[in-house]
Amino acid sequence: MGTLAVEIRPLIEDELGIVERLLNFDWGNPQKHEKRLEMQERDELVYLIAWVEGQAVGHAVLEWAGKVHAALAYKIMNCPNIDDLFVHPEHWSKGVGSQLLDRAQNMVVRRGYRCVGIGVAVDNHRARTLYNRLGYSEVGVGEYVDRWQYTEKDGRQVWHQESCNYLVKSL
Ligand SMILES: CC(C)(COP(=O)(O)OP(=O)(O)OC[C@H]1O[C@@H](n2cnc3c(N)ncnc32)[C@H](O)[C@@H]1OP(=O)(O)O)[C@@H](O)C(=O)NCCC(=O)NCCS
Image (cartoon, rainbow, N blue to C red; front, side):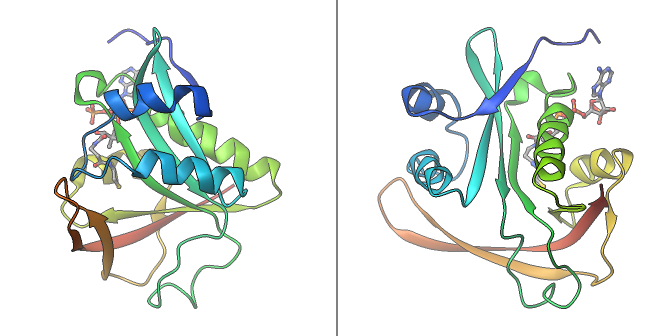
């Protein structure tokens, strides 16, 4: 596999349209990119986009406040969270996911944190293998249930839940 020329940078308003068009792979929640851009403007997160030849191919959300979940509260502190790491399937196994993680980790260090975390569904073996290879390990709370709300294509608000493990990396 050759190394792909990937550029990773925070989303800017001018690029919102292309990101909405090309990275529309989740459960029909087209507003998520715009919401993240607004949160980025309030400095709550950084919305990293991976670009290959002018095309948006992946994203990761770096949340400064860390993961908010009762099961994790007593185990992790001062540990920003990486959410919704995603790479377009056409570009899997080319190092894009690793580079998104690497960029997020560098930003975390630059802000003075010593730790970054990521939740992974218990059945997402490919992602877990990648995180383990990059030095993430289970924080020690076992399985927890993550719940979140999203908007269906028809506008309905729907709850989704998943059994996850939380992994952290010391930086
Ligand atoms: C998980 C995910 C983000 C990984 O993205 P990716 O771009 O494929 O990740 P990478 O290419 O950096 O690393 C994955 C693989 O490439 C290999 N790899 C990475 N860079 C490489 C390089 N330069 N040369 C050779 N192999 C490389 C890794 O060893 C790993 O091996 P595998 O394909 O045999 O499993 C992607 O599969 C995805 O979007 N999945 C769906 C959403 C998801 O599950 N997100 C995670 C939520 S916790």
